[in-house]
Length: 171
Image (cartoon, rainbow, N blue to C red; front, top):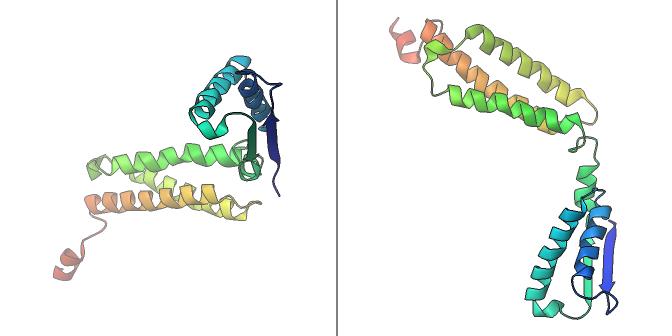
């Protein structure tokens, strides 16, 4: 089971103090070192949300389930590692390839596109073999491989290396 934060406020916490306390406890629970100003803003937001709902008036009882988020946050491929940020950055290759589809095929570099195909092929294998398996990296490079192979086919057609089926049947 996941960890729970349970806060029960009584009259000992008056006014905004209980919401600042809640924001501070949540900050500590998530292992964030938030500045006091951010905790104050979170407390003010919680105050507005809870005060607007009449069912929360009086004692405050809040349970926060954080196990799924915390498991992702601390996982070997989570946002604290290069196994997460590397693939996020590599999605830029996919985006660039998608943008290049709008450009004329004469502007495509056959050498660079072939290198990108080999690069993505190698890193797809790496993403599959590394432990723990990096599915985000695998998806990124599979997408890049698809885009780059399409670009390579456009370049090949423009250079005359590839013919359309209709032209091949005529010859």
